[in-house]
Amino acid sequence: MLKDVLKEINDSDYISKTNIAAKLNKSEGLIEDAFFQLNRMGYIKEEKTINSCNLKCSNCPYSNSCNNIPIKSITVTEKGKKLLGR
Image 1 (cartoon, rainbow, N blue to C red):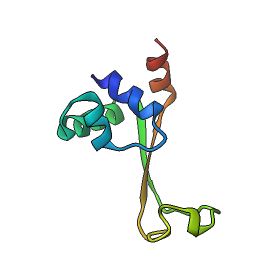
Image 2 (cartoon, rainbow, N blue to C red):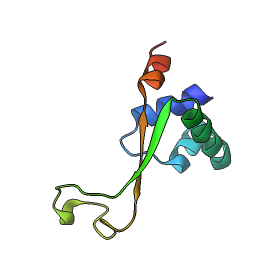
Image 3 (cartoon, rainbow, N blue to C red):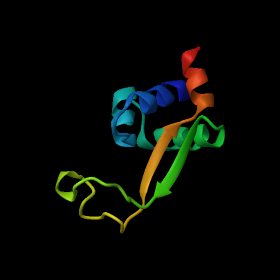
Image 4 (cartoon, rainbow, N blue to C red):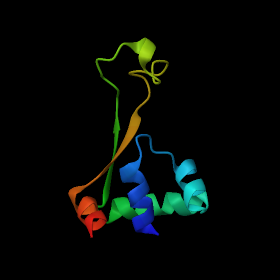
């Protein structure tokens, strides 16, 4: 199941644990645990950053909270990409 979650993360433009849970027919709690395990094992990397982009705010979905609320980004690491390539 971890590989299925990793594939969903890799294939998604916008990562939503709720959407992944629905797509895989699993509970959100199980998906939350999968994210924790994938991060712990080094297959994904989670970072909280303050948005400092150059987009015009009217086009940005984060414009109301820009530079105020950290945004969590999740990326698949090289180790994770190798696992998906198998």
